Image (cartoon, rainbow, N blue to C red; front, side, top):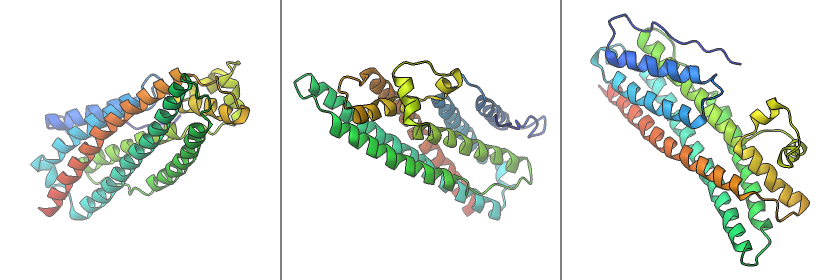
Length: 264
């Protein structure tokens, strides 16, 4: 389990209320990284709220006076990379959601006499391979986000914000990418056989759906698809995308504020 440093005294005791609020939001979000009960969507909502505070924080004159041009340039570069990561996350979600909807449509047609859904399942699995390649590339690029040098409390706070953002996106992309477990392990899960608690806890909605659809192809079974799993995953993807859409707007707004600081 990763160990996170939570800044407890980033600012003097008489700091601005916005700074205090930002510190509290950051501590709450970082502590949730290790909480098993904290859902991914909750973390993304927390990140969205965090950036609302960041934008207000950056607009405080006292903070703008402490930002150096060379430092702002580095933060701007990092913010652009984070925007790209957010956009990629939304893209892979959209691709996966579209293929799930195709399968659900095929399953509805089955009741009218069309029994074969192999083509839709094959397209879904192809998309999943493409998505996993995109995620692997994105995770690699995330390591290239320049770290902020901590020279004063403002730098330290925004360094924590950037690191927390990267950690949250890593969690999101790893979730979308799914487990790297073998098909045999997945088959055990789908068939309802006993699995270790540790293994069961690591299975995401994507894992369960991938396993089910892989069996459709490998075992030529047409009645194995549990539509409730597809409905649940589609609903989850919709919820995540709505939060990401708001987060993307907040990231754009924060970048605009940084550009304004830099130009002045």
